[in-house]
Each structure stands twice: as structure tokens, then as C-alpha cells.
Length: 110
Image (cartoon, rainbow, N blue to C red; front, side, top):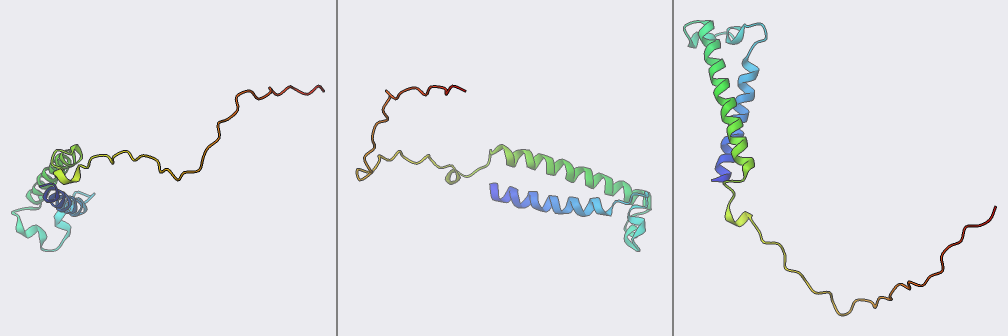
């Protein structure tokens, strides 16, 4: 389920980028492409449809992002237990205790 949602999320992201690139900053929209606006009855309806599809894909993208980042659909095998604690090996070098009765350093006179 998680992998399927990731694939759908990727497809929505690619479609969203394409639709955003189809928008024209001059309110020209799909009318700037020859023959593309003929699919609709007018350029205004083409731009309106483009806006609606873009908003729908934006909401879908954000919703899928929240669901995927929430970790609600992770597979059971993806969750692993922490490794067991291992005892130190017996062949470790012997350590010596640090002596605590060291003389204090005295400041030197100027």
C-alpha cells in the first residue's frame, strides 16, 4: 500500500509540474499553444478547467504528502527492533584506573 501511494504521489507531482508550466503569466493560458484550446469551447473555459485541475492536483499532492509522512501505511517489515546489547569481548586490553590523588597545579609567580 505504501509503495502504491508513493507511485501515485510521484505521478501527481509530475502532472502538477506540467500543469503549472501550462499556465501563462499573461492570462494567455492554453490559447498560446496552437490547437490546444480547440478542445474546449473557449479559451476562458480552457483556463478555468486548467485552474480546477491544478487545484485538485495540488490538494491531492498535499494530502498524499501528509499521509506518506505520517507513516500510517508503512509495512510491518519496515519497522525493525533495535539490536540486542552485546557483551564486550574478553580479549579486550586491560585498562588501568585513573589515579585520583594527583597534585594540584600551582600558578607560577610572575
